[in-house]
Amino acid sequence: MVTLKASALEEFVRDIFVKAGCSAAEGTRVGKYLVQANLTGHDSHGVVRVPRYVQMKNDGQIVADQKVEIAVETPVLAVVDARYGFGQTAAPQAVQIGIDKCKAMGLSAVALRNSGHIGRVGDWAEMAAAAGLVSVHFVNAAGSILVAPYNATERRFSTAPYCVGVPRPGQSPLILDFATSVVAEGKVLVASKGGKKIPDHALIGPDGRMSGDPHLLYGDYDPNGGRDYKSGPGAIRAFGDHKGSGLAFMCEVLGGALTGTGAATPGRRFANGMLSFYVDPKIVDPANFLTPDLTRFVDWVKTAKPVPGEEVLVPGEPEARMRAERLAKGIPLPDEIWQSLVTTARELGLDERRIQQAGI
Ligand code: NAD
Image 1 (cartoon, helix red, strand yellow):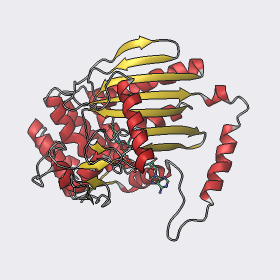
Image 2: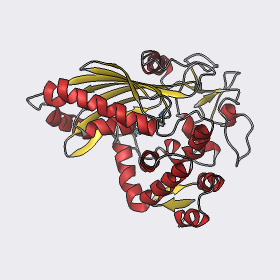
Image 3: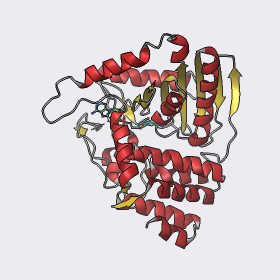
Image 4: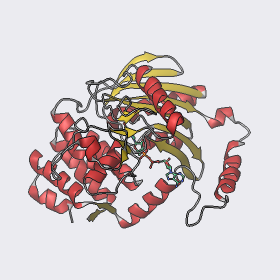
């Protein structure tokens, strides 16, 4: 295990992406958001993604420094085509459009289509919350077919995340942000590389048996080599029985079909689609009922008697705690993940002294 300061890791990731052909501004954004995922404890969406992003850039699946295109625009909505640019470049632009329209109109909707991987969706709800706005996001990952619907053993959905953010002035926002599968694919990836194990009901085999073995998703793999989620015979299970599976279905419909990205389609080029709604509490709630009521409600929820050995938390609380801890103590990375970054940096020809300096 190596432990790195967040700022040092951000800079190393930036340098890797600049060497891969991104501008310094784009490299900085990719570094910032991948490290944010590690800081909040979502290592599955953190720097473990670096080799895969570089590969996608080299294969032409993601385009560096792409300009987004506004395909449709009214005073309250926009359809933003990312044209396969990096999600860390396209998503903040789409969110900013939603924020600007919402501030003007009280409510807005933005459909982001054909984006490179947008990472941790909570980043985009946090961006809206920092501007004082409530937001709701339905996301799909077209082409990334990983999840078996309720009562199925075959894949039909992406891990299609859902996210809601609510600002709390003077406190960290409430952020509900999860994949609609038992685990996000990145968590299977981390487990396959020696990181935290996944639950033994997370995956399902062709015989209908549940398991936590990453081989069901990736097939046979070399511990130090790449992982291809298309190679395994099994699937990740949709969470929450018929209800979670239904939410996943609607994330495909709203984040995929309605944005023009397309609901899950085998063989399609990878793209995230995201349908986001923004509400300005200042306009909906001029009497400022929301903030004190949130304080009352959160306090009341947290005083519910916990089951033995547990604690009652509200959405976003585990991430806020982890961020404080990792900012203070550094981000721990399993050796295998750190080595995959170093290998990627070397393959791109990053200066060896720079690489050595990053690991200190
Ligand atoms: P998860 O299972 O860790 O759930 C996270 C959510 O549950 C958060 O809102 C968190 O605050 C809340 N939570 C966690 N523990 C809690 C507790 N004890 N009490 C109360 N609330 C608690 O998340 P996940 O499904 O593994 O998703 C991880 C990340 O993957 C998310 O950020 C998601 O956006 C991202 N993702 C992205 C894509 C993509 O295509 N871009 C696809 C899938 C997932």
